[in-house]
Image (cartoon, rainbow over all chains, first blue to last red; front, side, top):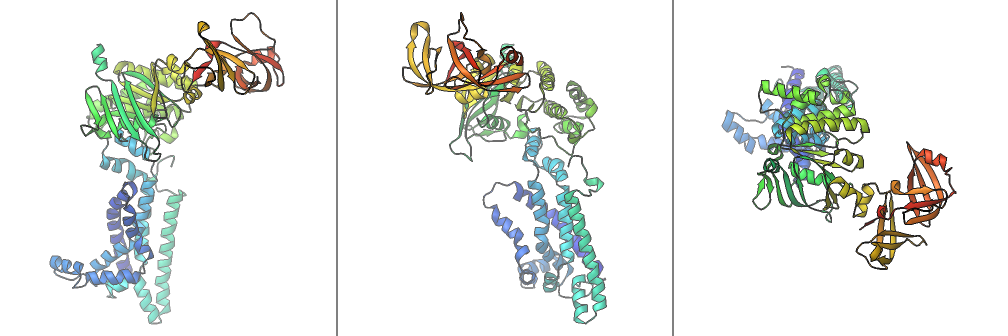
Amino acid sequence: MSSISLSFELAGCVAVILLLTGMPIAYWLAYSNWRSKFLLESIVALPLVLPPTVLGFYASLAMGPRGLLGKLWIALFGHGLAFTFGGLVLASVVYSFPFAVQPLIASFEGIDRKLLDASAVLGAGRWRTFRRVILPLSLPGVVTALVLSFAHTLGEFGVVLMVGGNLAGVTRTVSIEIYDHVEALEYGEANQLALLLLAIAFGVLCLVYAVNRRVWTPAWLRWPGK
Amino acid sequence: MAREVNSSSLVASIRKQRPETASFLLDVSAEAPPGITILFGPSGAGKSTLLDCVAGLARPDAGKIAIGEEVLFDSEMHVEVPPQKRRVAYVFQTLALFPHLTVEENIQYGLTDISGQDRHARIEEILEAFHIGKLRNQKPAQISGGERQRTALARSLVTEPRMLLLDEPLTGLDAELKAAIVEDLRAWNAAKRIPILYVTHSREEVDALGERVIAIDNGRVVSRGAPMEVLDAPRRKRLALAAGFENLLSGTVLDLRELDGVMRIRLGESQCEIEVPLAHASAADAVQIAIRAGDILLASERPRGLSARNILEGRMLSLEQRGAMCIARVDCGVTFVVHVTPGAVRALELAAEKRVWLVLKTHSCHLVD
C-alpha cells in the first residue's frame, strides 16, 4: 500500500472514531455543572502542548508487550499492538483529541440555552433534544471537528514515528516518507509529497473557515437566518 | 362547576435563593385559577424565577407546587417531576423557536405521543386558531415578529398543557398587533380553561388582559387582586414606578386632620405643602408620595372655585412632545412631571419659564413605602 493511501486511511479512521467518542465528551463538558470539570478539560487539551515524542513514548510503552494495552491486545487478538496500523490509529486518536473535542464544545456552548429549555418543556428528553436541536444547530462545529482531526492526523509525524516505526505499507505514512526521502537526499520526491500535503492542508483549512464564516455553506448544512 | 374549576388551579408556595446574589430570596405564595393571572413587578423582582420553578427548569430550595391534585414539586415529600413530564407550557421572552425547523415542524415538536391522524387534526386546528396556516413552511427567520409570537404560542398550546406560562411574550409589538394576539389567546382559553400565568411590566397589557394581578417586588408578593386595586394604589415605591407613577416625591408629615380624613405634607425641603389621604403616620414622619403625571391638572391662571384641595404655583421648566402627549416639567419648589395634550399646550400657550398652577386632587396622591 502506498504511503498516501495509508495516510488517508489512517486519517479517515481517526476522524470517524474521534467524532463518535468526542461528541459525548464534548456534550458533557459543555453542559455539566460539575465544578471539577476543568480537570477533564485539561486532559483533553494536553496533546496540544505536549511534544509528540512524549505522547509517543508513553503510547509505545503502553502498547508494548509489557504494557497494559499491549497485554490486553495480545489476549484479545493474539498479536501485539505496537508497530501495527491499529496501534497507530489508537495513538493518533489520543493525539488529535483536542482538535475534535474543542470545536464541538464551542458549538454546543454556542447554542441558546433557552432552546434546550424549550425542548424540555415541550416534553423532549435529553437524547431527543440532542438529535433534534443540538446536533442540527452545531453542524458547522461537527464539520470543523471532522475536518481538523482528519487534517491533523494526516500531518502528524512524531507520534507515528515513535509508535508505528517505519514499516512500508503498514505504518509508513506520507509525512514519514517525506522524511525518508530527505534523509536519502531525494529532494524531488520529497517535494512532490510535501506539496501534496501543503495543498491538502490549505484546502481543508479553507473549507473549515468558509463554513464557520458562512462564506459558503453546503446545502445539507443550510438553514435560513443563520 | 366551581369545584371543577378549582381543581385545576396552580398553587405554588416556594422559597428560592438566587445562587449568584446571596441576598436575594424569592419567597412567594401564588395561586392561579383557570384564566389569565398577571404577574406584575419591576425587573429583577423574581417573576421569571417563579415561572422557571413552576416549569421545572429551576429547583426551589423549599416549598410545594401543584396543579389541581397533581403535585409537581414538594420538598418535604421529595417530589420533583422533571420538566418533560409536567405538561406545563412555557413561552419565553425570546420565544426560543427552533431556527432550523419550519413553523409547522416547530409546532409538531411537542407532539410525539399521539398518532398521525390525531396529530394532523391538532396541528391544523392550532394553525387556524392563531392564523399562521400560510406560514407553515417558513422558518422563524423568514416571518415577522408578531408571526413568531403566534407560532410560539401555538407550539406551546398544541400539546394541550395543564397550564401556560408566558414571560413577556408580546414585548416589542405595537398595541394593535398585541391586542389581536391577546384576542386569539383569550378565544383559545375560553374553550380550554387552563391557568395562564402572564408576566409583564407593561401597564397597557395589564389593562388589556387582567382578570387578576399578583404584584411582586424583591422576591415577595406585595399585593394581589383586581388590576385596579393592585396598580392604582401601589403601596411600594418600586411598584409605583413600574405601574407608571411618574412623580415620586419625598415629604414630611406636618399635621394630621383626622376629622377631614387627610394630613398635610411638606414636599422635600421646599415651602410646597399638599394635602393627602390620612394614613398611619404621625407628625414629622418622612413619607413618599406617588402621583400620576396624568392625574395633575395644569392651569395658566390661579384657579378658583375647585373642589381640589391642592393648588400649587410654579414655573414651567421644559416641555417635550412625545407622540400625542406633551410632557411638562414644572418647578413648584420640587419638580413635577405633568402630562398634557398638544391642544392644551396651544390653548394655554404653554412654554418654558411660563408661570402656571398645578391642581392635585387629594385622592390622586398615594402614600407608598
